[in-house]
Image (tube, rainbow, N blue to C red):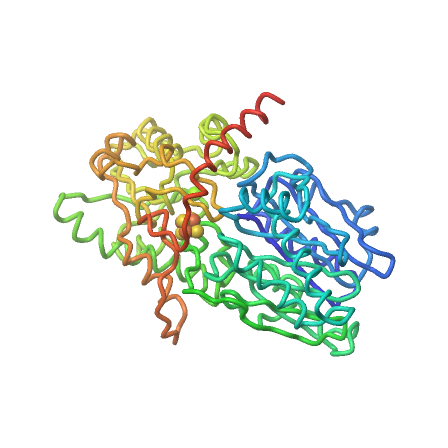
Length: 499
Ligand code: SF4
Ligand code: MG
């Protein structure tokens, strides 16, 4: 995934950027960076590690200017090398600083094309560099047909070829030196991007603007949400504070369902749909489904126990609906990072035990209904089931608010290898025996879609989120992405052997 932000028209933009990145830390923990722009030029601080460790009181002071972009990195392409850390910068035909959340399926062939046709040699493994070069290329040709300088028409003209060529997900924010802030979103709106504004006297318009992956990043700095960018939309805020926007190329809206299920922060709205309410709905809808299945299988749990943190909200709803007591009996060590985000299976396996520990005095002799947001590789769930049994539970049922994940994601979530997915080629019975549970039950896809769509009151929207990792129906051609997992494995081997 990754978190992106960009802001313009506010004093000390870097400080606001820092606060926003802290609120988006859950979106990526590999690296963080901020680039600001002042009349003296670009200023940047970026490094591997958490936001808190990358930025200091001193280095933030060097980030001068009234506009900035920032990034939290969760690597899906690249080696985790410092050269891949964003923002990335380009010096021609304008100074451009760029941050990107998403994944470009055809970045390999586009990189090759840039090399052979435009003599643009890429310096990093990052697919963001492909976007940056395509944007620069577009701006170069638009300045040869338009007047010198840069206006919104030129930006749109420059983005046309990028939208035609790029296959994948992208929510991008760029700073253009001396001109303003440009944000754009892929044609399916796969990854989130929200726009907000607040009063400020820096720009003639009297307003400062911010775009970010999630609304929580806007709220922390007092920006009010205007709206999410539409699929395929570009937004340009110039140095007068004028807002320009246009949909460059829209396809069917297919926002990634995983933002609501797991990834986003519960206090955010993603595409106007509150994450908290969606997760509550997921618990309720799963409970309704379980009522029937429990009756058929004569299952009568004594308690509902959430797997912290992301399934808590659904667990509360589930417990209320089933009228089974809610108990927090897996205690999370708050000093351990999210295990999924660790980069190797072995590290993840070892981390689970450190991360969660059960309460034997309460679990002993009980029939326990464990709920998690999703089962991906089965590493966490298998271990947790084992721990709960060791703690004395009589029976252990495991339910997931997300339907079975059976297919790889090529759009930015790091489960690219089909063989790693526990639900790949296994039915529910086989999953039960693999995980060692007395029952394993997943939400039905319809329950997931309705939980998202119904989370916003008075919304009559009817669209289908991307659920390709569940049903294999990808919104774009992913054949070039099939090479990903091999390449990624190779990259990781390099990383491991390096240290
Ligand atoms: Fe999200 Fe799954 Fe689609 Fe990837 S394949 S974008 S994780 S819904
Ligand atoms: Mg979890």
